[in-house]
Length: 191
Image (cartoon, rainbow, N blue to C red):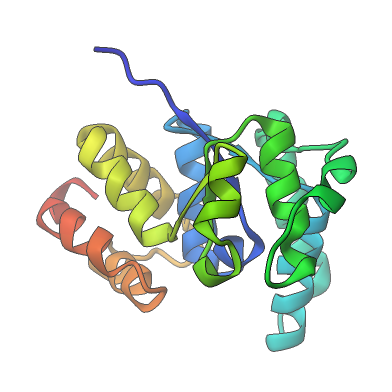
């Protein structure tokens, strides 16, 4: 049976941590998922990261955004703003994420902020929410070999730091990918 990738909107909080962003983008590059984001989502993760870690030059963050858009041009969602007023969420500032999901025909919003996206509101839009840990764990459960391959490529993307497979798994654990790293831990030699 052929694997059909889901369309998933990556919320800013999922793109904020470096190693997680690297892995999520690699999964999209490998066509395990059809990733979607907006300029507003990019602005949010860049603003948060530059505020919380001012040592990172803003130019590096803009370069990361530009590279993401270059390797995944179909990921950019536009024209979603008309949906924003129709979405009801606890934090009105999150409505743009759901609006992007509606416009993109997504089925999943990948976010750590699951409380900000009530299931009933998402269901009305054909959406569900998943933490990055749940999302990647489910991806592994469906297509383990391809997921392990994507993790290995994401680690190899870190050429400058020469991160070992064990160090990479530890970094993902620190970024709260507990269930996922438990699944991929036995595959250390393949990473």
